[in-house]
Image 1: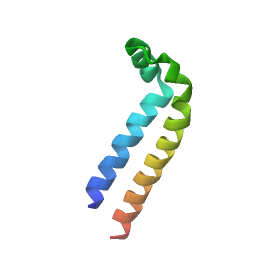
Image 2: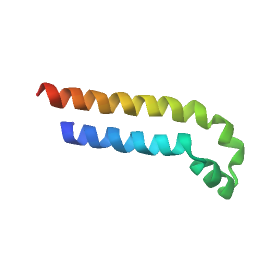
Image 3: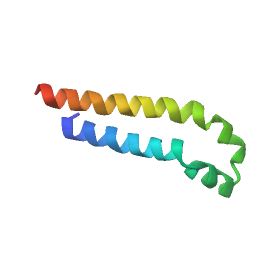
Image 4: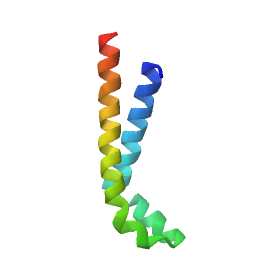
Length: 67
């Protein structure tokens, strides 16, 4: 995967994960479609995903700087 694509995926994933973690975006969406029982498990998925996307972004930046 090229550095630019890796960086784009990392940044987009970080922004989406951060929006879903720190705003009630998914809570409202899940409530609207009737899946509000799954809201309790969102933190177990979103926080690790946010960490992974942040690490991916940092890796892409480091890789671009070394090249």
